[in-house]
Length: 341
Image (cartoon, rainbow, N blue to C red; front, side):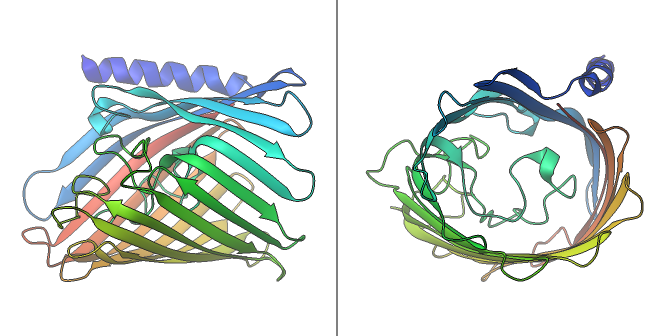
């Protein structure tokens, strides 16, 4: 009965949302949103398979521009309890909540709750290349949301830099990357990046995150020091548009969070658009925890745009593990609907 209810809800969503366009209420307010639903199947080499049928996430966002230089973004976010929810006992939360001021000289100052700079793959499921992320299994080096203040500065037409001071780089236990620590006293975080587009068809990005103290239970739970440990993350990625139909992207991440929380992640994506509606992404990614488990993941994910508002995506992945007994490999298959307005 629950499965039938989920299917009915997802079907209704798919038929209704494509009829919408981005809603501009007036010159000062516009509303946008998206939702993602999927069926996912995972079969490890030992034990039984697991599967899920969910509306995986949905977001409704308001963009407010009361003046030319002042803007604000507020969004509500839904994630089912079956996939971790958004906080203890909750499936919905206020996600974005920040104000920005454009100085007019290339600098934009923002304050409130916003997503981390770090990571080639997006926090927003509708913007990713595949149903599942390439990494994040053990180290989870890419943070989610936190609160603080940031400064983004456009140096020239090719170079942008940014710096943020936040309540914590990593997130509260059980909050599924939707909230930071809530104070600067013990877990103050700092992030910075530089982006360069001065070479034709090439984007280069480098960033760093530093947290003064990550307590056990925060981050991925990999912090073993009794009183916590500082964490540093280095992240570099680049993407090259080979031609109108194809592009290649690569990323390398290094994380040092002390014993049991140190290692690296990497990914390579090749994307090819067979038609203006069909794009296939081929992925190769991996992770190595120092003195811990590692894996290599092989993935392929075709996406078909049914309309400008609705897309259908499939994914097949095979992951080979080392030092992760009894699991040595796992197969994943999934089908995903993506809707936006």
